[in-house]
Length: 261
Image (cartoon, rainbow, N blue to C red; front, side, top):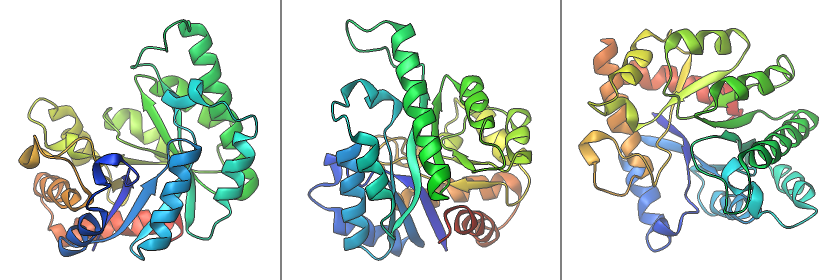
C-alpha cells in the first residue's frame, strides 16, 4: 500500500534487527522500500540488502557530506558497476549540503567545489545509464536546482526530504521532477512543511522516512524505521482531507513511475 522511498537500511542502527525492521514495515502496510546508499561501501550494502529482501530496492551514489572522505580514484566506476544491478532503481543520494561544516582544514569554497564536482559527475553517469537521481539539498536548494536544471529533459530528480514551500516546488514539478516528504511534516514546529504537503497537487509527491533519522512526531525519541512512513501518510492524509488509502495510492503510484518499480 505504502512505499518508503528513502531509507538508510545499511545504518549500523539496523544491524541487529534488520529482518524484523523490514517485517514491521510490511505489517504496517509498507510494501516496498528504497535502501539509499551514501558512499561506495554503503551503496554496496544497499544492493546486498535488496538482494536479501524482496520488498527492498536500492540506490547507489555518494552523498555530499562524504565527498571529502572518498579516496578511491575509481569511485565513479565502482558506482557505475553497482548501478547496473537489476535491483538498483536510481543513483544517489547525491547533491549539495551547506548545513554541515566542511572537514577541519577544508575551506567552504573547496568543499562546495568538490560537492558540485561529485554531483555533476554522478548526474552525467545517471543520464548515461538512463536512471533518475535522488537529490540531497540541505540549505542549498537554489544551487541544487540550478545544477539539476542542466539535465532537465534528460533525467528526473527526487528532491528528498523537501522542507520548502509549494511555490518553490512547483517549478521543479513542471520540469519533470518530484518532491518527497518525511516525518518533519508532523512536527508542530514545522507547520510550513505540512502546508506544502497540503498545497501540493495530487500525485506530485512521494513519502519517505529517511530512517534511521527524522522519526515522526508520534515516534519522537525512537529510532526511525520504514514502518513509520505510515504515521507521516496518516498526518498528510488528514491535513489534505483524503483517506489514507487514497494518499497511499497516489504517492505509491508516483514512486512506481519514478523508480520504475
